[in-house]
Length: 531
View 1 (tube, helix red, strand yellow):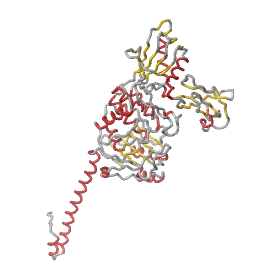
View 2 (view 1 turned 90 degrees about the vertical axis):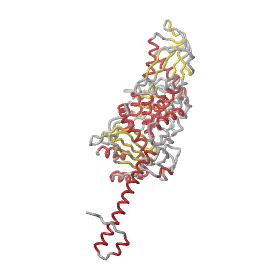
View 3 (view 1 turned 45 degrees about the vertical axis):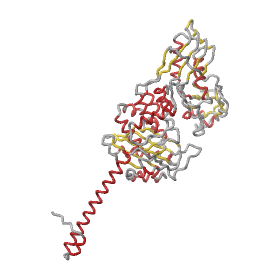
View 4 (view 1 turned 30 degrees about the vertical axis):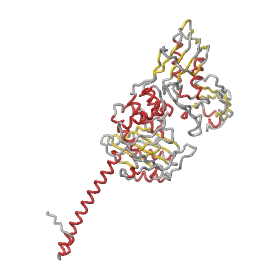
């Protein structure tokens, strides 16, 4: 049928009602077509803007979020770049999710979420995706993928051991030197293996010193209580080129079967550390045994237990940071050597390997692929910082936070259009770290297409099965990195949908009530898995 277009002035001159109706119908059709075309152009512009423009940091924090405080609450006020005001259109939150957020007293502006089909690139959900938020331990995903690219999944840390004299009649006529390699997993077993290897060469006594070289990392001494006032928490341990057993102590309490005491054991056996061999038992239920022990760490190289240990608790292991972290590696190796029956005429101390000295042997760490599984499954901050420093240590022969930050920025800019993440030490243990859900989504898409995707995915906790997601009640199949601080909660990783498609899911919550939001995380996993 032929459409007739008439001007309004001509319309009014027509006296027949049929012509008048046809006239205004034509005008409405033209105006509607123009409106629809304009809408499509604006939508296309809005959708492409964040992918083409890599500038403009945004903060997720609004006036509803408390500013930084001395406790562990996520910080900050809004930082909105004018260029970020043109952003992608938000999806509508699912009604059950919105109602749950109301129940949890979480405003919509506290949430960023992106769900993306990694096969098709379609996004069933993106909400406040460009707002930069505190990511907590989700930032470990950046450190992990950069390490896989720059170091490779088969990379190992090699810790060389040197001697300055011959081995004769069970005696080493000289000193031992060990150069720290930054190995994130030089645990108690690895340290014992190194010492046993020396003994297996026939060394019973060292006529000299045992010197530890920590020069690979330029890591200033860290105040372990600066972050949250908890200096004895293992997650607050600083990086160390010779990190022995994560620079942590394991206090094991075992109730005696007959006597009214619990036996106390400390591993590794730090040389010079004083502590009670037993503590009194107390009746009653197993409540907070740590509080009941009333531990006193106020004296250097001494642990005192003023309280009692509940018998109902059975055997418990209490991991803690040592009272004197700067002396830890020296005292740990000294204690282990003596426990193995080794003797030494000199002392265990810090120093430098003499130039030109060739290693007697090197002890290899597990591969990077194995290390990131331990790091991400249990969100180990110390391991993440070690890995972060290794990015610059093995590129520049000296590891520092500043050098690693530069390498990470260059790596990011060469691969992604989203603004680069801001991280101080690659672990997420900082209130100043920032990253958007859009940036995480780009990272997850890149990781999915990477030749090392299997290694990264295998390192992530499985919802309801292991790691930091073991207690999740979500029924969907999901491999997700978790992140949490006071005022911060989030997940990022992959979810298997009902249609056998794999989705990347990023959920970031920054709000004083974030600690209550774990049901919301489970709800998002379920929502993604049921697609």
